[in-house]
Image 1 (cartoon, chains in turn cyan, brown, yellow, orange):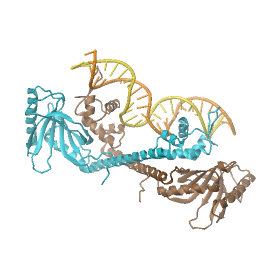
Image 2 (tube, rainbow over the protein chains, first blue to last red):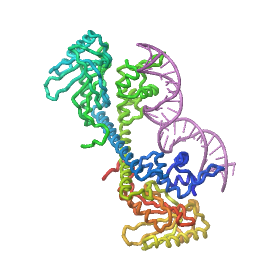
Image 3 (cartoon, rainbow over the protein chains, first blue to last red):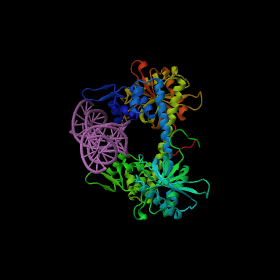
Length: 283
Length: 283
DNA sequence: TTGCTCCTCACGTCACGTGAGGTGGC
DNA sequence: TTGCTCCTCACGTCACGTGAGGTGGC
């Protein structure tokens, strides 16, 4: 028989681990001295401990390990448990690979630009919005031209909402449907959330549900819209770096546009093609 | 300004997360109502939150995230932190890949054999032993022949130790130096640990240090040595399954060999070629 | 008597999730 | 008055690591 220390050395585990396995009833010692509380392990228990360690190393939680070594699960159930762990390990591996890619992209960015960049890109689902909107088509690219257009559109929208007595229920939203044809006119929309129960009747305003997007790339632009293109460029560079595909559909949420344009805060959102978790791993 | 719920929805994090980031001083709200304790966030804080989330997703712990967003680290330090996370992510990825391979090997084994197998293989470092030993060369393979040889060798060893007044300090150990030439004689050694301070003078006994092995594959054999080959076969199959390379050097530790051979417990150990952690990933 | 091994609490880990129980403004 | 949002504790997570403080046998 072996004392705790000897048995621990034998199996190359810590004494604390043996205590723990005793505490949770996973590997009670063959004998416990009633006087001193000393634990004594039988040589044969190394076999059970090995089974425990082998199953633990497959990723099974100790509660499941106990059921397996105590033979409370059938072969089929064991197979099911292992398949689950297989899927989990696979997922975690993919997640780690993506994390690693993100870290490396970040390091490359630091090496190349010599600084950390003002825009942090966050991937998250984009919520749907129930909005009132007015729109216009334009071939005028560039912020210098879009500024006045949106000024007019939002003015129109708010005036009309005011006329029909409807309160905005959220921040202003600009929507762009990027056409795939270069130089084709883009449709720009000025929208603002309104209450779902509100019934707006106006022939100048449309009420629509801007759909939710499962995955969007977002970043926060601070300051005047005159150089919002820096934010978009950050998003595009990020997409290129990470190999994400952009759906050519973007939104701007005006989180704060009171007072000085220098203090404005806008969230830029680009819809991404789905590529989330799940076994869709074609190259 | 945004209430907790609105800000949480905006960033797609939980309210609890915002509370937590407030608690640890990572993202205190722009304003806290002294009466009600209500938290109010400024639009501009979404930028900080995005930075936090981006860094967190790279694997940085929140304490380090705080230092980075509070600009308490230089660009070089940030680079160092990211390199560390890079290494970590790489390691975890490799670990998950190995775990996945183990799970899959186990599943294959279940499919093929239709049962779980009596031998669990555990990889662990093998300790060094300071032993007294006697040896012999033999061409007699097979357990039927080795049994009597070891019987004689261990008898000799114990008798001689007794004669010179030295106590065994551990279990009997059998050592094999597997020659690479088939049918060449193998050297078999019968050993037993003795105290380091003990000075043994006998021309029939050698005192040697059996070296430690960084990585060994081990399993527990129970019952008579007559069919210890089942244990070895399990080890060899395991090595084949997992692509491990065996160093052709093995040990048997007799953990319990009192009384009925049916209750004997032996640990079988095979030295493995190093292949542990570290960036040695050639195929 | 000095070492050595062993023991039992009990807190800490990391980033929140999850109730329990209660309050303030429309 | 009923909802809605918000609040503050405080425990739980998972498998141990790490002291603190003390005991029994050679």
